[in-house]
Length: 491
Image 1 (tube, one colour):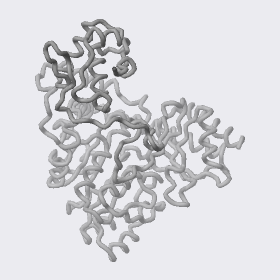
Image 2 (cartoon, helix red, strand yellow):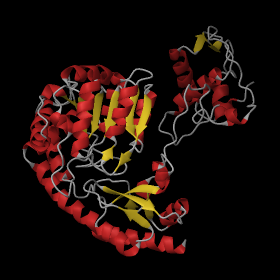
Image 3 (tube, one colour):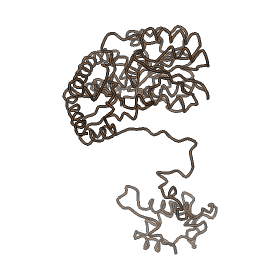
Image 4 (tube, one colour):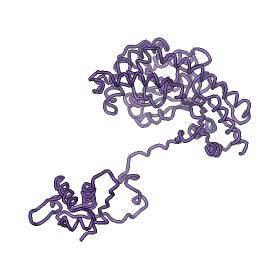
């Protein structure tokens, strides 16, 4: 007789009924090949004694197995494992280290690609965080958003929880965006030119999926937003990297490349390039648009934090001057409100939007219609504008404070230029600093610092990093620099 007591574990603390646990235990042993088709199961009294349960529990488990087709009950003879089940191979002892890993960790088949390694840390574990440029969610008007959201939840509309058949996103938010983009960015479009997405990355995914065929050449900055680089490569695009200097991406270099080979698209971050924070100069913007018209390539314009510019009014986006339908514009509310609110948008010609909708329906049936409507209500009542004006002043003061702290306490350790906008500083550490040790020592003292290795796309940038200032108060920034100063002095 099989050792059913050891083969079928029972845990009475589980929420699952015991008879179901027993039935599932039998099924697992059948699948593993340890219980064969045609085997006569022990009688209910015998099995109850083996497993230490009431006989009625065994009867219920056998009835469950019969209902599912695993067991056949024959009157006056007993319960038998279904003869028509295929014979499973009994599991053997594992032979190599790979097979010793749990199936929850290691699949039993190989994938065609190797996933990239992302250097991410759990920032929530640290009381102080010099992140890579996140907003301070503590100053975001979440209470206003929650008020609008609650009013929508408690409204009498019977359709509020239905499918949203408009895959482009909530019509009220798109109408609010039409007005907002026109008044703040000089982009004049209609609701048909806007697709609401779950953050900007979804927009990039949809755009490049439909824009690229294998082998297409896509120009990006030599230092660039890595997730976009990876998306381009995933869809078969070939990265063509050009320099990024104090005036932004090198458009003369783009021109030289276009004279030699066919370019499908240029990905550009005109305001506060990621990671170096520089802005594209007005003359380069004009020339880039002229090159796009001449060579008929698309411009994918990433404008993730346009709203935070401190020196003067920011130069208008490339799309505001596009008269040929060559610019595809992507924006996000993650920086102006909170990263957890996955709300972004793509602005493009209507035919491009239709391509994106076709792809979007297979990965995300619809966005959060209620959240989108609540955000639209904030925009309609001017609450988002008021928050951005307030945040701009707060973040500028924090930028100035952190820059002054670095000048005063770490002048020979960290070199940087004061950024015109954005939420972070692009800093270079002195060659004498072991950056890995610095990051670990700071973490031991409760300070998170982005490891510069994340941005090490070339030797020059191997010692550079984005240092965010927006997410911490003046006092928190002072504490952070004090810790960093102690760490560097110890080293």
